[in-house]
Image (cartoon, rainbow, N blue to C red; front, side, top):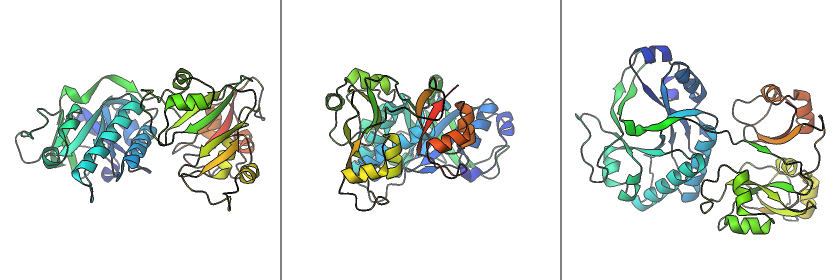
Length: 377
């Protein structure tokens, strides 16, 4: 189900004998289904088992990684009963080898980021002619209409999901909806709560600084640890997103505790969506300071992904606006957040958060932005 079904009566759905719903969470690298939160909350409230799927539009390996991490970010904090599904069916001009490489990277990135098993959703033709045998380590959820059961595709010897119609009907849902049969293989061993990794603590230890590091092509954790005077185990401990220390990807962000009594400087790689004001906030510096250190910046309002800036890392300085015993955190705003809800959650006030982060209009905040909070709870 997705926004195509609009408003759904989940009580009627449950009473009609439905046990499992797969909910579209996201598409590409920025689209969140507008009914995702509503569908998720109402499905859970009515005792239905829940799975999530992401519609892949990647055209490169880098985009595959980016979309997998976006999927993981969207479903943070949710409970899930079923495997996470990759829905990759719009291939454009990609070759078969490119399709398979994108699929492989997306699935590996997703499983490493969430520690949750994935499933491939595919029509019967693509399963038979496009997806490679290398991908059969991921179970198949196959769309195959007008048959009594899915036939052999020469690769997968079984299926965990069979979508047998796209014109099904269910009480509580207006219009047609996809209907499926699932085997036990679609379910996770238990209801899993996906941790919300948007909150990153800032240690108060005066002998160390904390930075947010963006992985670049060719990076290894051992090299990053060496550069910042720390250890691989320390980086892994601070970043639950790292499931395999030998498998990190460009674009991932890690919190790193640098063992230095001085704030020092770092090399920061600009990511899509970054602004100089946001970067300055995270590193406890100012836009003018960053500009003065980087002659490459001709226009502070115009920076590009991939640019590398030298930044004075002053993020260990105290944060004003609250009790000294309060914890200090960086919080990444999610879709649907309001400052009043964030303030209530962390024992702060809207005015204090707005002042601390130079937010001129407390009613206008943006998903993906990072703010500082004095956690006084």
